[in-house]
Image 1 (tube, helix red, strand yellow):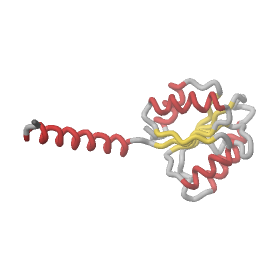
Image 2 (tube, one colour; image 1 turned 135 degrees about the horizontal axis):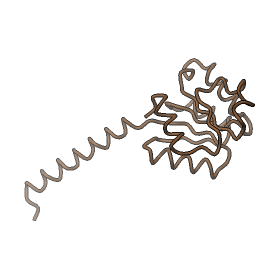
Image 3 (tube, one colour; image 1 turned 60 degrees about the horizontal axis):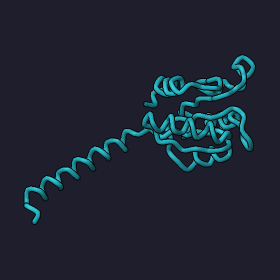
Image 4 (spheres, one colour; image 1 turned 60 degrees about the vertical axis):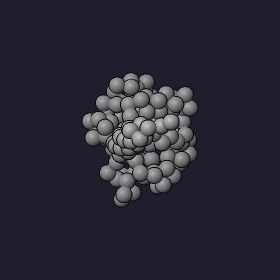
Length: 146
């Protein structure tokens, strides 16, 4: 037989648990990750999730653009060279779309930033691949996405 105090304790436990879960959900930041290499995309997704971010993923720039128009994100991390719509074109799209233009953009590339400087100007940060998890996370925090 269940006693009254056990019911009250169980109810207060679930209420506290729900409040903590709601608080965690409210603090979660959503990041869009656009990367055409499936292995790298999954790796970076796990890195970001373990750091507490909710991650929307896209395999190319066109898919990323669709996600940007249909979802609320706090930052964009994009590969420079992707099919359908490359990262530079995605940057231009974000910067010229009124409700997205404020988003921080981190551009990832295997190219030397000196060679891609003019094209990368639309981005807030340019990271060379392979990018370390610490550098990527630090870059997000520096842009207020923590």
